[in-house]
Length: 173
Image (cartoon, rainbow, N blue to C red; front, side):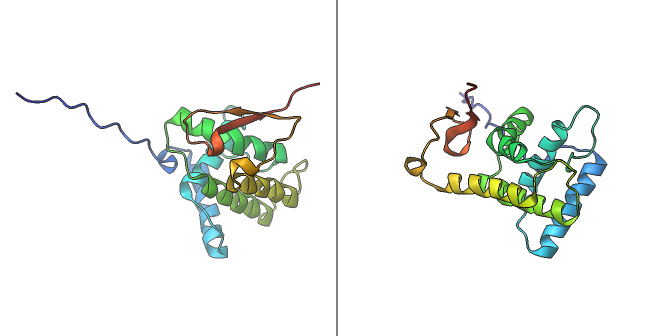
């Protein structure tokens, strides 16, 4: 009698395999080439998620990344929930958090080097500090992170988010 085995679960796709517009692929190649030339770390899956997320939040009909207006709030949203949401909705593997942070730092440095920040963007130094704060939080053991009493973190379950955090909620008073 032949035993019936269920098929192996299919591993989620990698982010860089998601089809994108030609202009976005070209931009991604430019960022990678610049990063490699200048010795900056870049991960193609993390970069694909960052660019994919900024494209999906840039508005309807957008075919290239809205890579000009960057604020610390945008960085926070991308790192706390944007990466997770984008990966989940497309069924792709989550890139390692450290690679996302390093690649985002490289991408913001690239934008600054090519003068691609629009008026209204925070300064490159503010953006780098915001990313660095997330790097420190991710590297610090949970019992050493002091919670801000004015903020309450919404905890995720088993979805691969560092520390299980999905978002930070700030109460309106």
